[in-house]
Image 1 (cartoon, one colour):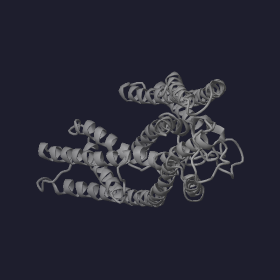
Image 2 (cartoon, helix red, strand yellow):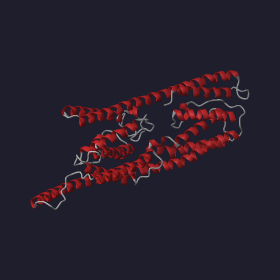
Image 3 (cartoon, one colour):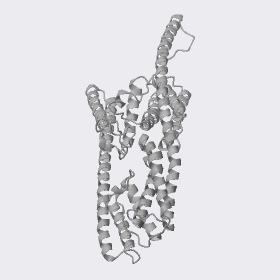
Image 4 (cartoon, helix red, strand yellow):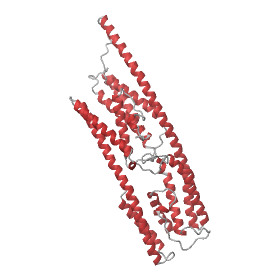
Length: 454
């Protein structure tokens, strides 16, 4: 987290450097220098105020993440008490209240505009929350808590609904606005579920001799993790946080297979199956009848499991299609950003050479590329707002600031260089492209270097 005081010191140093540069004998008089110092102070105060506003929103999001984490801990502790206590009625009631509270606080967070960095508004939105883009990045570390929520809900659903897989369209994730993003669902309800099933299986396997369902659970868990891993294998993760999480899933599967192997070596059967042909014929018939009954029940479970698996595969396929489309947008943005950033950088070189007309045209080319090629992509996928696109805007700001410092409002577009720069600094609101405070400050700090080279 960036303290506003530190940024204020950085801005003060940058603007003081600009003021000292414009006060040299080659540039302006002392009276003009005094007037410019007032402008620089006002600029610094304006930017510090904007940064403080962003810091306040970020701190609010971090405070909310603490509340979300506390709600998750309370629910998990309530589950442990229910499992360990012989008197479960009162504890189950407490658990249900905690789960209701958990769902409520996460839903409120998903519907709170302050929890989003709404850098791209949704023009079709009818109110404050629908105006937020469905892919708007969350502030602070709210996205990690949402992933933990998906992980918790998927584990409880798996244990309570006969090894079922929770869909991203489940009621707990749906509403006026979808609570989870695709990345949060994959990280929590898929990858996180695999790791939790591995831990639960180890715990159940330790009591396999006294628990007739333990080995069956481990088998189901192994098959579930294997199916999830097979579906995730189709994704192109690139070098992303999800890629690292996906890589760890194979270790969960390996641990489950190791547990099954150790159970087989130890002779744990998970039930009492009579395989001896000795004994009365009536007993053998009874055992055969029981086995046939068990096979029918397992057949029903298999049909239900197959249906749930097909639904899960369909959900994963839809998520993959969306993520593949976003990846194509990302590749297009990166390639186009290179041309825009190169144009902005070359405009600065042209200004140093005194070629003003070329500098103006290059800045215009950069601006047109941002408006026509890059902004439509960012409006469709706001998570691409950082990285290459942000670098383009920072370079553009530096070029605009340097041009304005040399030529003022830009009336002089001749090919000749003026020996007396105007010394004017564009304010944050004077930049016509949709920039952030960080991008403006980055360009402003780089401007001091260009002035020194000039």
